[in-house]
Amino acid sequence: MRVDNAIVEKRVNDFIKRSKELGIKITPQRVAIYRELANTDEHPSAEAIYKKIKNYYPNISLTTIYRTLETFEKLGLVSVVNILYNAARYDANLEPHHHMVCVECKKVEDFYDESLSKLDFSQKTLSRYKVLGYTVQLNGICKDCQSKS
Ligand SMILES: [Zn+2]
Ligand SMILES: [Zn+2]
Image 1 (cartoon, rainbow, N blue to C red):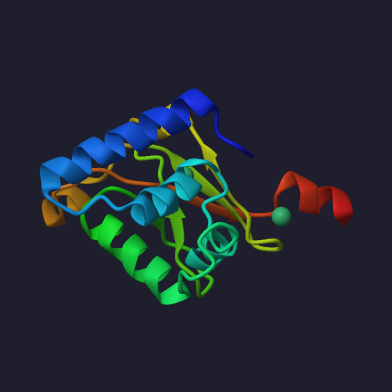
Image 2: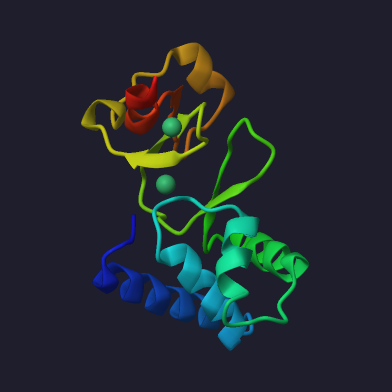
């Protein structure tokens, strides 16, 4: 699904602002890579972004996309969805939210659930770890795949 234009513009503006604060170079190519990610809630892989960018930056390499996304991730400009399949999937949505991962079509969808905002961790867990945040990942079968079978 495409993300609302106003949200995309806000994400891109925040991205440029943050990049300036962090002192990283803002090139048209970098902005284009970020914009492709900010444009969608599909949590694309580097390869999926590459396929889109190639249409208007025919000389860009997949390696550049990988490196750029890795840099963004290290700087906290994007996040990575850890999934069980071999490709990292990227997310421009930095609001706290959770993911549903379809084991059949590998689709990654966002979800928000109030009941997850106040998880009651045991003392045993909390004594080991200072929790700064968490993302819940549900593995299952999406609506589309359920209707296919
Ligand atoms: Zn599915
Ligand atoms: Zn997400």
